[in-house]
Image (cartoon, rainbow, N blue to C red; front, side, top):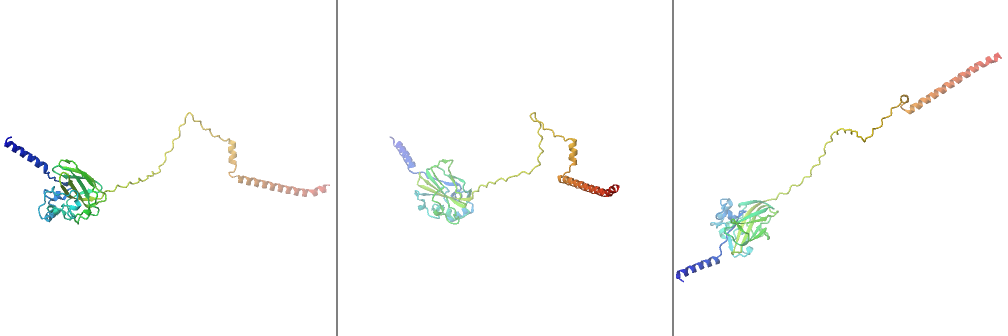
Length: 303
């Protein structure tokens, strides 16, 4: 085999060996909700904000690229390797300005209890597991973020999601009991590399709206209306004619007119008439007796 051909084969073999043994570096950071790295670090979108300017000054050096905040060899020992107060920088000096305790970081407004859509930008696909945490109720943005500010249970765990159009897309249900300024802390532990990525996304949560109480409908009592006169039913063939009222005879009418309206008056009149009759009879008897007395001597004289 010619030496030239042997050299070409060796060079190709070396290139293949190099590309298969050295893993490509994964890169990524949350762009929705916007993370502090995506806002303030290299190629950030909010570098002119007051918080980003303060972070850049506190950093003491230019930030690294926004999607390159990664720590090698953590292997799930996040709470052991990343110190309290340096969670947002991952403990890296190149990003230490992101650990400033401020309440004016560029933030995303959301509502407690809603479903949060997460877009994690990455230029190349890699396998790995995402774990997303939301700070506890009562978190103080005026203090550096510590592990005790995060619950032990993540609101989202997603393993090997697909990379679509340059981003991993996930969703998480926000708790209903968180309000005000909170931090969404995202850990992406690669399984295809030895790197673990850390990021802080600031949120402002408004309280969930309570469902409106159902109002009991008022009972409407209609006003009394004048009833329409009932129509007289039209006679039908089956209806029998009502019997005609009997007309009283003229004599009965006269007797009825002569009788007093009250029976007691009638009886009083009878009593008065009887009394008058008795008095008349008594008077007649007295007068008759007087005449006999006067006539008796004449009869004697005649004899």
